[in-house]
Image (cartoon, rainbow, N blue to C red; front, side):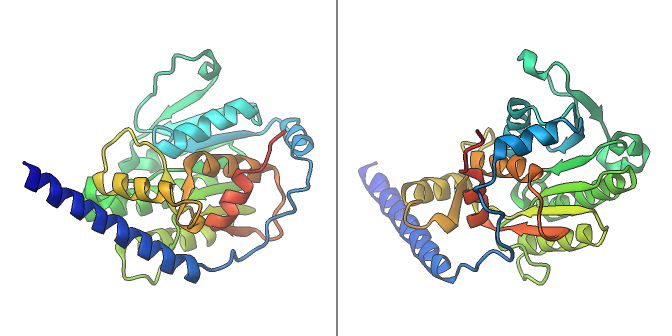
Length: 275
């Protein structure tokens, strides 16, 4: 038993070292964001109040996932929208009274065309939909992260949605040899081609969050990156920062119709005070 524990301890140490070395390399190779964020000297409270007075509505895809759940809470706490609709494969039960006024649309993602009405009449759309190859297999991953996401965006655009916020991933590149990054890059490009008045793409690095589902590899990476996040901030980001950034960015006015927020921009915007 002692020998086994010793071997496991060494293996964990080696893995941590590899992660740190990779983090160091990527830290120095990290690229700048393709667009400067608006000055954070803006009065966020005033912008939010102006936005609130417009009585806009929004929908969230993936509200049962880690990012989606926190995004919903952030939106409710900041009370930006007069109506929030959750679009998902099942109805979600909430105990808190703050969730009483939510509208829930249950859809079959394999037959989204039959649920076009669920995507109509929204001003803003948030997409946090996604799975993993380990959980759903390669085909299942492509179906969810590409097919479901793209079709939802198409229906939202056709339904009058003018502002679409997409959670993607650091390193997304349609030309990548890695399936995950390739699919993320492809769906980014295809949604941009739909011509939303505004498309905001968020590319966070490793999300620092205690997931409800078990992902051993991710758990180890989070533990290592959490302990050295001050050294390599480009390699991880607290999930709360992502959701705060998405909500704060909603009321800001970008310089271009399509904007990509890399990890550094997400951290900056997500850490900014909202009051």
